[in-house]
Image 1 (cartoon, rainbow, N blue to C red):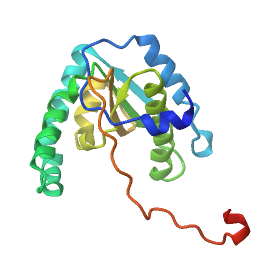
Image 2: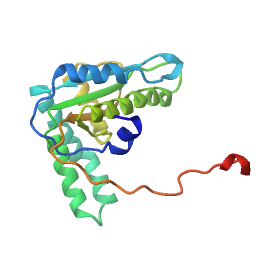
Image 3: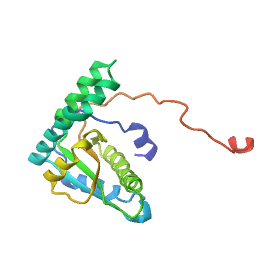
Image 4: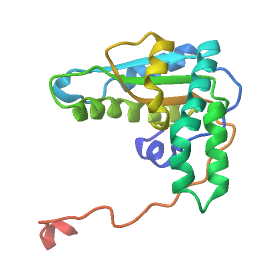
Length: 196
């Protein structure tokens, strides 16, 4: 698969089949994802990959987070789209049946917390594209971050900042292609000759 095809084909998947994902496949994806750039080359990402009972407990925490915090924001933003609110609530309650959940953490560094988050985010994007290449679906989630303390207790993580949760599994269906929003780039200082 060409990189261009992976970029254009990847979607946020919210419904997964129950088919298990081999651990070896996940290991290969994450090992390659960690070749991302990072601030001061600290490679300060840390991943916890869960399945089974721990995954089920993580899903319960996600849903608690939806009910206590993010659900109110979803209802406000999508007040004109009740079906989106319903689908989002359902997704948080089940994580779409994804058999694997990846927790992406940043280890604090000497620069700003923004640098730490950007470094981990670069690895996450690599992970999403690599997963798609292997026929897997993913969904980059930041909504459950208000439950960081609860996740940390479940996973035994200390001294790190939770950046995202990534449900992962074989897609049950292919999401629709969302439209791209325009006027997001401005080019300055290009000569007429350089524009062609």
